[in-house]
View 1 (tube, rainbow, N blue to C red):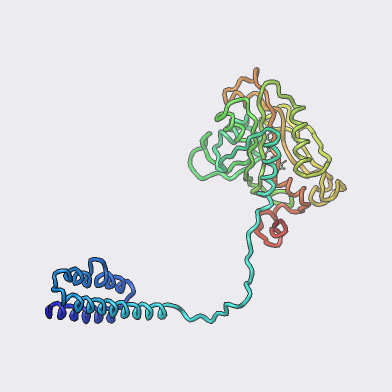
View 2 (cartoon, rainbow, N blue to C red; view 1 turned 90 degrees about the vertical axis):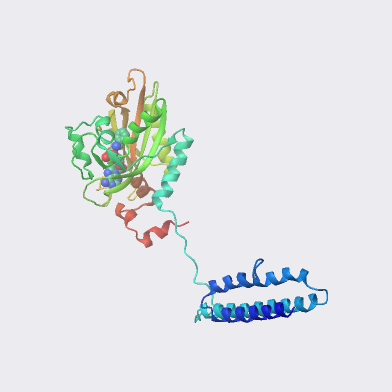
Length: 346
Ligand code: FA5
């Protein structure tokens, strides 16, 4: 028995010395396991108890318990010392009222996009999404604007630098119209979609023109679609988005991918049609291009124009936002100016 007692005392001294000397908290956890763990040093002595004589068991058992308690105590002491050393002393008054938390708001264009999507969904349109980096074929050629066509000059764009100069040349899309092509190729006909998205043009900016702006493309292809359907749907949708009756002007317009083509203007709500800097004193803001899908566009995606017909439109979501909220400069949308953006926070 004397031998066990000696061994227990030696282990106790060794444990206490090791724990005191340790320099980091991880080691403390390791030593705790080493001495007090299920298979640790102290547990070994507990297992020996059963082989001792009856009168020796309480003496050795008591010593084991005292040793455990002494080791637990020193471990706790050292842990506490580490804790208080790692807690920085801050000059902080926790009773002060909070400075308040600011939450971000939804950008007005995003809000309007959601509204437009809801309205067109109610009118039976599916919302589709596309890429902002397009290839020349989807952005121009398939839309009846071949390489040599002068209409390419109207939508000057940002080309992605590379050596090729053919249909696979990539560029930042100049309009959402490539989604007409992509949707017909992917989904076939009949088809009724809208495609909202960001587009890019290399042009001088002014109160109505940005280099980066948003459009919403619409396409409806079926049997027997007429221009009356187009006029009815757009008149209805515009009024629903703006939440009031507005004057809408339809006039002939040229886009190579529609025939006949129209341009749609909305009375300038900033000056109630009287004429101002934003509408260039005309009283109208150009809002959308539209028309009946050109047979060449249908042929480009292997759809028979003798069976199917359709209308398409592409309106400026950014222009619509200007009209809805009376914003007199398109450049405010991307300015990142919080004084502007905060006005739209719900
Ligand atoms: C087009 O982009 C055609 N893809 C529209 C279309 C689609 C016609 C389907 C026929 C069938 P346009 O370049 O006119 O057309 O642009 C359409 C609308 O985008 C304009 O009426 C205007 O509201 C808006 N827009 C055009 N350029 C800018 C710009 N730089 N900044 C802000 N909005 C613009």
